[in-house]
Length: 363
Image 1 (spheres, rainbow, N blue to C red):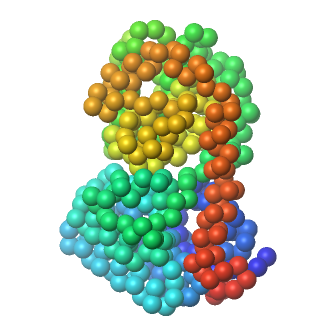
Image 2 (cartoon, one colour; image 1 turned 60 degrees about the vertical axis):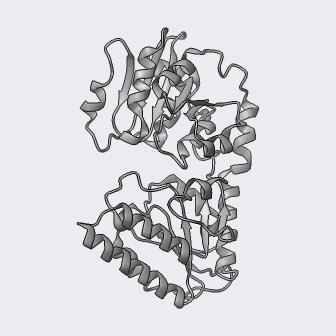
Image 3 (tube, rainbow, N blue to C red; image 1 turned 180 degrees about the vertical axis):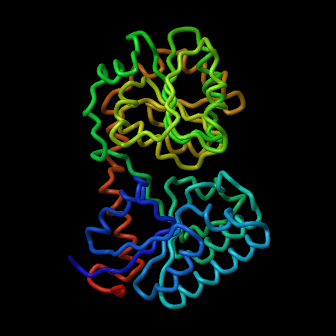
């Protein structure tokens, strides 16, 4: 294995599938990955970076939004930007991936906007997963087109055992009748994700609808979410984390996955659904139309009337009748995990001066 540079990733969450997939090829090439999950850890690790090393900032919420108050938020912002400037003076390079237009939990808006603008200014590369990202965030931060690189979110092809559970077995596990239309929401259940609108929509549909609702509840209680489900709606709920080994059971049982988000820039849930060959309903936002509008397995609901619009789509049993396996494969093949990981490794090679074979220091 060749000696390669070091990559400092923030925040590092070992269980995060996106980070694990993105880093596959770079790790195989010999890049050494370090991580931090808090503001103080990031400052400490940044001091270790030199020429040939790369800092990669992903989700920014822990940096400013976890401050005690406005003064603390300002101090966190100042010390972080100073540390990034110092690392760059020592020869380190910076990648910033834009995951959200702004964090969903926003306590210190002005501080976050200042952070975004500071990162955009200091970054060597601003990584976007969708071609329309710069336009979506333009009211928050102006991105230099020369810095923006699009490396799409990968599919999960080959990562999850899609064929490990057949559809009949999966549906039997939930006691779903053949005529029932299983509508899935799987992921963290948070206010901005619009699960309340989905529940209202499912309840409004005449016919055999079964709502499959799974994920950890955040910023509200599971009892609050359960209370939204009317007596007449058949709902199967699991208000907890769904292990990777059980994802296939939920997706294989579903007829359609609905992601009724009120705010979204990128969503790995769409790619997960496509990997399991489940059609998807998304909000009709221009950047999502740009990215997914040509896909026959994607439909869009009217964001001005989400519950009613979703209900109309769910009532149309022929909506995805013509969708084939080839339609999903045409989407997932160009964004396979290994292809995406190789694109990321090529970016690291470029920034670190062809680090595979030279560059960083052993630590």
